[in-house]
Length: 275
Image (cartoon, rainbow, N blue to C red; front, side, top):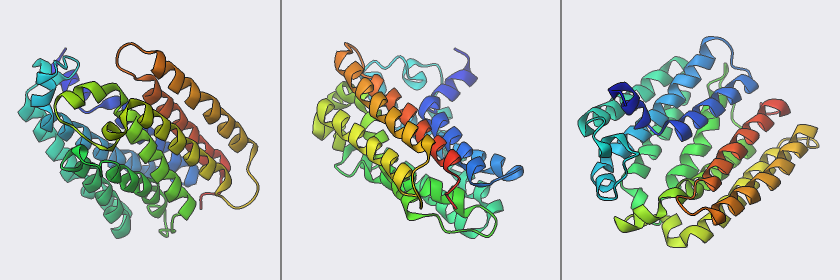
């Protein structure tokens, strides 16, 4: 593995890329055009890079203890210092990338970065581990809307759906790492609930997010809304069933969350009723 690839892999590109693409698609759906689409992509991407790199910088020793050869820092493919510096640069870039959109969008995207990093430390190992996800994922779509010309206020249902989606993602995201986390003393809220409890909570939260997006906007649900709701009802139980059958790390529920998250963003794009 090349050094550059190792640095990219240390940023947790799968979940970070999914969030960045989802918010960029949302930006297009609510009316961003031209440079502002790229601006949203860059600002949201910076938050995801920062939280991913800082996470691997903080967890380097723990990853080595648990034999996480899939982690570039733990395997020696890239130095801990390099990943730490990359995380610092990405974190400092967040408010700078928000500035072209104005004061309030800058404040919102900066808060997203702050709460994301608060998860890395010190909340990851506490019963409050879900709080950064609730806040950051609620603020992300709010940032996308407020960054529009005229800075319109984001609808409450949109912020609520983002928070529900983030909370669900948190419970699903830790499923593959529960055993390793327990071995090194990580005790976030999902770890306290256990694999079965976390999978159930993740599914319920994601379903609630989908229903909020379908029934939250004014007027009757659209046909894409009904289709999205039906898909979520099918995908989440399948992810749960696959997780229960898995013999190794349970990644199926996590991937189901990513699928439903993208379904939710598509609901926003096709609804045309965000602002």
